[in-house]
Amino acid sequence: MSTLELFKAIQTSDFSRLIGSQNHLFCATAQLFHIAGLILLLASIVLVSIRLLGIGLPNQSLPQLAKATKWLVWTGLGLLTVSGIVIFVPAATNYEPNFFFWSKFILLAAALVVHVTLYRKITTSETPNPLIAKTTAVLSLTLWFSVAFAGRFIGFF
Picture 1 (cartoon, rainbow, N blue to C red):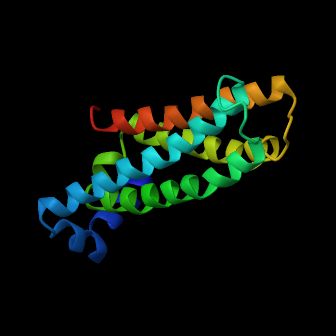
Picture 2 (picture 1 turned 30 degrees about the horizontal axis):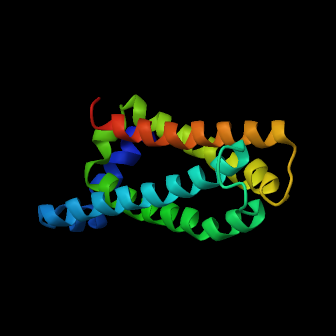
């Protein structure tokens, strides 16, 4: 089964028809939840990254800050996932040829790998190696914001 055939099957599913039969406010609400999820995720990543870069929050313990923002990251990711599915399903075949759609998911996979490995490890130390901390922060910020920008460009191409 090709990707296009899979996306056609998704778009013609009962779930897709159910979402497609909703009024425009339902879709607008899904987009609002998508934006809210993005804000929660990116704000949390930015806060911890500022601390990793050494440009802010110097009196805040890195492990405590990472622990305090962890639930925001995963809540944001959950909102993004659920709302993204609701946005995607009724128009799946429109996304299949879109370069930015595929780029978003490659970048998302990379961002998640960095987040659950390097980012998680570096934020458990009170005084991480400054070079590794700064590299992790820049890499994480670059990947997560690239996911956001790729997602934004999906609608233009």
